[in-house]
Length: 155
Image (cartoon, rainbow, N blue to C red; front, side, top):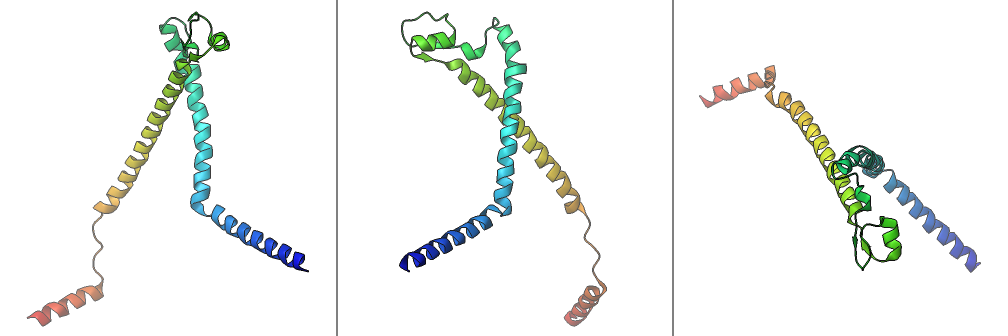
């Protein structure tokens, strides 16, 4: 009997918590945030491809055909001319090339987002300007009549 009461109370608590979670998850701002994160992740992949496949190859060609991903500094007495994978097997390395690529990805992504925010702000400002510049609507007949009565009473 006691076990059934405990089980019933647990179910009731869990159901109440699930109902509260559903209300939280279905609010507009949580869903908007989730959509933003998903779109942001997809956009990050596009920027990563732009950097890896379009921007980095010409930069690598300009500096001698090397890929930034293989740039490293050996932290022990090993030959610095080895490929990064082999150098990692031989000991510790400071692989700064991948960091440079990721940093470039970030800078491009930040710049693109900055430009998008600028465009949205400009569009908002253009929409707000005509509303602010519009002439005030003429006063209603009742308002005009009340003003005339007020002015007559002042005399």
